[in-house]
Length: 638
Ligand code: GLU
Ligand code: MG
Image 1 (spheres, rainbow, N blue to C red):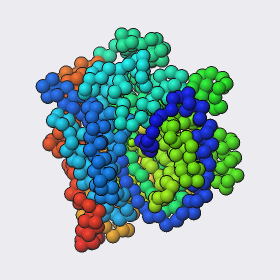
Image 2 (image 1 turned 90 degrees about the vertical axis):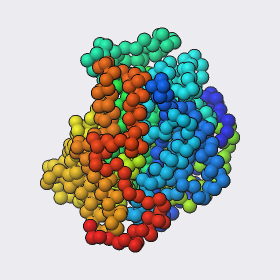
Image 3 (image 1 turned 60 degrees about the vertical axis):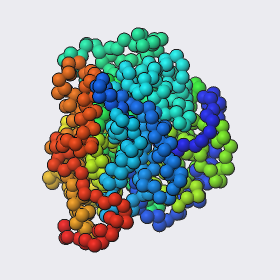
Image 4 (image 1 turned 180 degrees about the horizontal axis):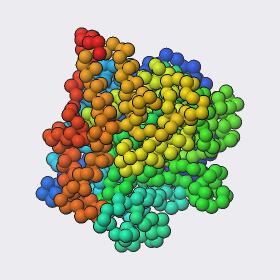
């Protein structure tokens, strides 16, 4: 979830009064950083994955599964290893929003060699083992995008009560005890987002209208302690949620790339943007919310609403008086503008940005595209500020910049090098939902990394107007989007559209299958492009085999031959003997589902409708071992 500075959080009033201070110094810090680092060259391509996990506690007697709130205890032990031996750990562990979540990354980044793909899955496997060793009997670590009964009655271990009248969330459903307490950031964000907005956040996700779902579907909120404010915003036929935890308590799979220079980082940022909705649809894994089956497959809008700190004025519901801008999106959403010159003409959505900041950036030699991007991020107020961090040295620190940057949770993130480090310009790819098994997560990671190589080596152009990416984001979350929806995508990605007929638009609608696997005479397909790139490389037999297994999984998911995680989860619940066609996920259904997931993820049972014939790949433990092996066993001429 980004940076964690230590300290004592300020009240919302104080934070609010310092909003301009944070912005002012954040911008100066960015300008200083930019001047120092814009010409930085020659960083090598490095990359890494980030996986968020949930701790599940099974009670096999009662047949219930709950979220275990022991992340802090487990993290303390995991981080102790890192403190003792910072240079030499296999994985790095960080807190996340939920008191039931932990986030893990490889101990050191991967590099440009294809042989590194042989390590990814083993590293994910080890990571899981490492944390799993610290679990108590009955506990399991799961890479689950959302816990099906999160926010339903009695979903935590130990039990915790929501507190509608006090605390950070004021939720009818989500207890503050389920927010990570090892660092004040998470509760502070929760409180400040609610206070800034002027009311609790409101998340309404359409319920799956199965035949025994009441018409209209409406929950009794009063009995939970609602003072009327929830009833006012809860929509009929929707699953209503009222806390940041419903969104930020979801898990995802992210990737970070270091580019060779700022230019390449801009290119990657832009070119990966149209892939965000496609990868969101393909990785869809969260059809259940608060104990109900919903009518969507992805977490995206849930998180977006869960941190929507915009006031009524900013949401356009009241004339602007206190606030400066009408803002059309939450802090968590898809990006609003491209950064490269090539992307400029596809920036078709009017960008809301702070004019003074924009001018200040331009006056300091920052180009228009980057200036408007930063000035756009900086329309937001700080929503968490620590007393120790108010006064900073703008030549050396970048905390105020990071304060705003790290609470703009967008599909892509453009990251300048941190001060005083050997790290270069980076981009983060953030849309993917996390999959149940290491095999699937490794497949997605390798696919995206390979796409970056293909994009850069073939100078591909995947750009479509931002407004079309937004449309795709909305479609990607719909139920069964992979097989049922169409997405705007560029017809000709190889020749910058120059060889298409003038009358034909540069982009048209495709299914995910056509985008991934190709459409005859129209579009070659992303996997065929990856394969043609690989054919021009010297790939050793092991690596070739690993990559092909991963690409097969992606291809089969895209074609509908295999189910998406979301489709599989739906199927499991709908076919449970206890299911009453009422969209309700009972404790027992939840328990049986999570038990099955546990068996699938630990390879105890096979699940060919989700994974196909292979469920793991033969991988190698460490990067040096994988490289040595690849050198010994050169290309087999694939
Ligand atoms: N858990 C959030 C998600 O599912 C991301 C939080 C982060 O930025 O690390 O998108
Ligand atoms: Mg995270």
